[in-house]
Amino acid sequence: MRTLLAGGRVIDGTGAAPVPADVLLDDDRIVAVGPEAAGQAGPDATVHDVAGLTVLPGLIDAHCHITFGEPASNDELFFHRPQSTAALLAAFNVGKLLRAGVTGFLDADCIYDLGPALRDAIEAGLVEGPRMASGLNALLTAAGGTAGRLIPDTGQLGYAHVVGDRDEMVRVTRQQIKYGADWIKIHVTGSLPNRRGELTVWTLDELRAVTDTAHALDTPTIAHCRSAESTRLAALAGVDLILHASFLDEPAVEAMVASGCAVAPTFTFLANLADHGALVGAMTTQVDLFRGEIQATADMLRTAYDAGVPVLCGSESGFSLTPYGHWHAREMELLVETLGLSPLEAIACATRNGAIALRRPMGSIGVIAPDAAADVLVIDGDPSTDVAVLGDRRRLRHVFSRGRAVDLSRPWPERSPLPMEKVGTWSARPLTWDLVHP
Image 1 (tube, one colour):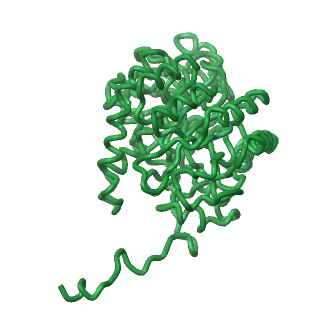
Image 2 (cartoon, helix red, strand yellow):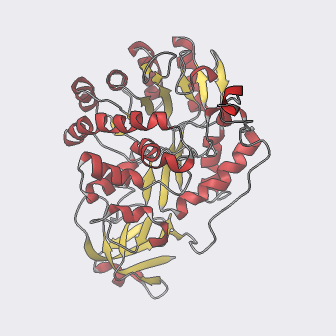
Image 3 (tube, rainbow, N blue to C red):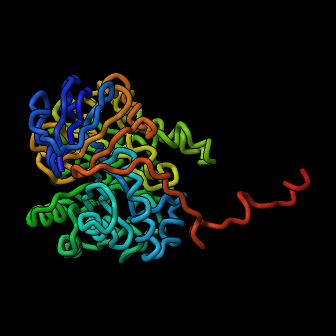
């Protein structure tokens, strides 16, 4: 079934300036862009008059935790999400992405083994959702990750699989690929007691054990790195996509450029906490720390961008500070504000460059071009001058996923809390005698 988008302003996702053009879709393929589109539409095509609107590729979120279920703490994430409940929540939430203009996403690490199962359910038509690439559990050493001592010394919990030595790193990498992982994720940095920030908790040899094993099985690797040294080691080890890349320095950028890796800085979570955390009672002690992390990373990240390192957009949706369907477009705004990218350059990071996250050839998805995948948005506004309009769902007029129209007229999905879903606290602070009798 053919669909003609007639008379719109087209942003093709490559960074090029908008042009007036018709766009013809046929199943999951863009057939034509320009004057020839109307001539090839045929009498049975569905025609949408999009004059005055902007046509652009669907957004690709390169860092989205669809199985986490929006917890407010690691305690909720690890101990209040039974596997069956988590699966139902993921299936409920994934449709929100489509209705926010996200037509593809990468969930690099999931709780339990839900990621590949959800991906396959979407592809089979059991669940409505965007195109999805998935990892399984993130690989951690016994030093842990961002959850500190909640992570066990061995085994699996939540999104984590703790690997003890080189042999186990190789075995678990092969095992994850066997069970459907599109990516292998490594938590290269972790939070340790009495230490500020995150420290590197993997050696170069350990990282190479994972990357060499994964690459031998035609599988890319992705790494959580929140320090310059961890980013440098990950690039040297051959990691394909680096998340955060916080506090970059020149040696880290040089290693990234030499390796050919990509980066998804994921400023959105940090910015949401710093800018809006007070609205939802977030811990104010982290505000300056997170705002400083963005400032300390942005200049060298721009250097990496100018040197040819592909930058992808990720929102880290899946937490209470980044609920599904609300913040997937904010990373583009932050790239404009902090790196000085133009809106069109930022859009390319969220569309064309997202092909890397989906393991698709560049130019085959995330662009408006003949033979590209038919993932297309129509929005009321001009993102080439104000990229923030892409974050306003009220402006979306059409979303096409795999060439099929997404029903935007339905009410936004809402639900009630599940039993035992949230942590119950007796108080926010101890009720001392002195507090009662000042």
